[in-house]
Image 1 (cartoon, chains in turn yellow, red):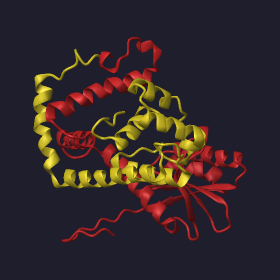
Image 2: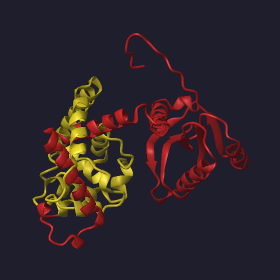
Image 3: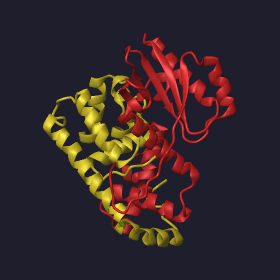
Length: 139
Length: 184
């Protein structure tokens, strides 16, 4: 698929525009508040630990991040086996590259998908939890 | 794939290409609706699906119920058996799969708990045997507990053969309607 050729049909566009009003509902507003809190908490953990610079996250910190990520979407892969089966150091290294490297998005995603237990949902979940304005949650 | 600077898609994994393609669709929605963040798009699509489908389909309700049930039991393992303490929920056992809950009993033995919504067939017995086998391979002493809502004949027969180390229990859901919101 190429961006230049992809577009929604007129009917799909009409439906999407109509559905946008659903975001004004009390339920959607509540979700948005919870999601914002969860994302702020994830950023706070990453900053406090100095993860971007070089410090690896410990199991307890991953536990907290997974907990906050599950507010965004339910993903049963987010458990300690995710980093245990890949090795804590290796998992930290690949996650750091996914979130902070200057490599192309394709390269960053590709290397993270090589990890055990990681699929499209999980890679997009990490990206979206880190920067929801840039990356969608798909899968 | 031009916008992702990919000249040769074959150099990348299929799932990488799939992710990047999906991303283009989501970006189109974001731009069309002028929505700031992608979480809102997921929320919107979820709410739209509910609206289109009218009442939630039973399968969706059941998935929700199963998750609610598991979370409730994870917070209160004593409800399953007195003296149980939770080790972890969604406990991964590598190739053996992911167990809903893994607890420890008063004697320190592992207890795998599998929760199933509604009536459940005997497939769950094979599933829990796999998890127990996974724990045993790790050198742990383990037994199992299956929690369902309704009796099922086939399940009853299957349990009969393994009743020494797998127990069947039933849950009951109680609904309460109140004038004011309570979180308990």
